[in-house]
Length: 511
Image 1 (cartoon, helix red, strand yellow):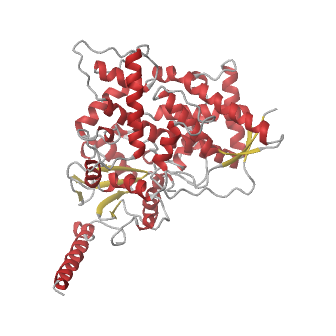
Image 2 (cartoon, rainbow, N blue to C red):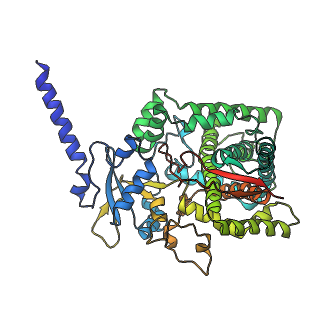
Image 3 (cartoon, helix red, strand yellow):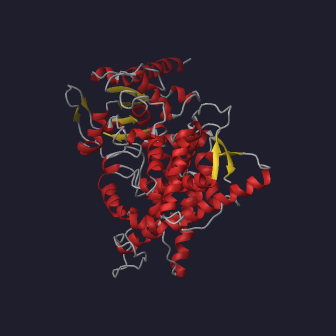
C-alpha cells in the first residue's frame, strides 16, 4: 500500500489544478458561464449532442452580457457578444487581435501554414501577395471553367429525371449534389485538374473530401486539437501522426506541380498563380498574365509543401461552405414560393438582358439572387464562429475589464445573426432586408465571411460559384419542397454548419 499516499497526493494536485483553472474568470472579475468540469462549454460536444459551433451558440443564447468567460475544456476563452465590440476587435483594434491562435508550424509542417492559420508578419506578407489572385479579371478568367461544370450538373440531373422520374417530380438531395459540384469546381479552378464527380464519385478529390469530413473519433480529435490545444497538435505532427486527407493532398499537389514544370503547362487557375508567386516573388496584377517563369536569380520563394498548404485550405474551406450555402438557399426558396418566383424571374430577366447566355456579367446582374445568398449566409453562416487570440492586453472600452494577452476570443456568428436585437424576426428568411428601403438590421452584426483585414479572401469566388449553380438550376427546373419536410437540423460533427440528413428538394424540367 506504499502507493496509496502517492495516489492521495496526485488526486489532491489534480483537484487543486482543476479548481484553479476553472476559477480563472471569477478571479479576473469577468461574467462567466456555469462551470462544467472538465469539459466546460463543450460538454454537449463530448456527449455527441451539439457541434462545436452550436455549443458556442447555446451559450450565446443563454447569456446577455457583452462578454462572457467560458472554458473550452481546460482552456479559458472569452465569448464576445456585443456587435460593436466585435467590430472594433476585428477592424479598428485589429492590432490587438491579428492572429487566430490555432496550430501552425510553417518551418516543420508547411502544410499547416495555410493563410487561415498563419500569424503575424508571415500572414500579412502572404495575404498581400495572394490578394491579386481574386480580382474581377481573375474571376472572369475562371468563369468559363466553372460554368462548364454547372452544365455537367444540369446534364446529370436531366439524365436522372429521364431514368427515374417517369415525368413526375424527382427528389434530389441537394447538399450532396452541391458538394459534388463544388468539388469539381475547386478541382478545376484551384488545382487545374479536370474531374467529373458526377460520373466518377470515387475520384481522388471526392476521396480526400470524405477523409477530411468522416465522423470518426480519430479525425474529430485531430480536427479540434489544432484549435483547442495548438501545442498538442504540434506534438502529434512531430511524432509523425499526419492527417491522412492532408497527406493525400500534399502528394497530389507535388505530382501536379512536377507535371506542369516538366511539360511547360500553363493554366488559368489558382495553382498557376501560386507557381507564379513562387517563381517570380509576386502574382501579376495584369489579369492577362498567367505564366510562371522563374526570376533571373532562380530563387523560389515558396516550397511546394507551402503551396500545398494553401491549396488544401482553399479546398477544405471552399467545397463544404459553397455546397451548404447553395443547398440552404434552395431549401429556403422552396419554403417560400413567392420568394422562389422572384428569384426565378431575376435569373430569367438577367439572362434575357444578356442574350440568353450565362456570362460573368449576367451573374453580376442577378441582384435578387445576390440578396438571397446574403440572407442564407446570415441565417446559415457556413462557419458559425470566428476566433482570435488577444496579442496584447486590451482594455474593454467603457469597462474596467482588461482582456489579457494570450486570451482566446470566440465570436458566435450564428448567434449574432439570429439575435432579434440585431435582425428583426431572425428566423424568417427575408432577402429584402438588405435593400435600402427595407434595411432594418445592425450592420456591425453581419459578417458571414469575417470582418476586417482577415475577412475571407476568397469570398467573391465562393459566392460566384454558388450563384452559377443556383442560376443553372433555377433557369432549368421547377423546384418544390417535400410536403412532409422537417425543419433542418445541423450535424453534430465538425465546425462548419452542415445539414444533418441532407436537404431534399423536388425538381421537374420546365416546359
